[in-house]
Length: 209
Ligand code: URA
Image (spheres, rainbow, N blue to C red):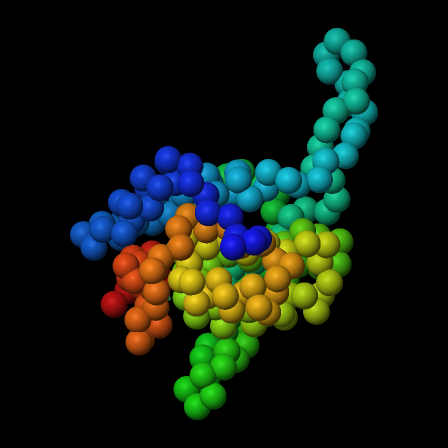
């Protein structure tokens, strides 16, 4: 699948397996998600553009590299996307944060936006949209569509688990947006859960249900 990156790093795969286990506590699920999102952020930011700056070391002046442009934006798709933020901020502590809230209209089954708050000057920024589960892909595609209206410099989508259906939805709607995931699972069930999956990510992060 073009533009889909499965992060096969052994630490990522190991931690994902621990998270999938049904008896993982809220505490360990949350901690593992934090660790995984730090590791994934490292991979996802691998191609960030650099620029040269002049600095002074204690010994001499040199030309050195820094990340180019305005601060990166992490956009969380509420509510489970918030579980990705702290771990990613370990790697990019100056990142700005946006939030988008969507619910599914029971009649049309289409995502409806109820919250949207982004940093200023989005047109000059690189955006990483985060949501642990890419299931049907409808929310992810709607979130990216909404963010695209602000014309950011680039958009990437990061999840923990993807279903083939969600990948297909995203690739159809946004073939220009790379997807980073720790695994692509088998399928969705009739309730829209990823199989074998890890259950409801939001409930497991926040200890609800
Ligand atoms: N959202 C979840 O939290 N889990 C799934 O399996 C699918 C969507």
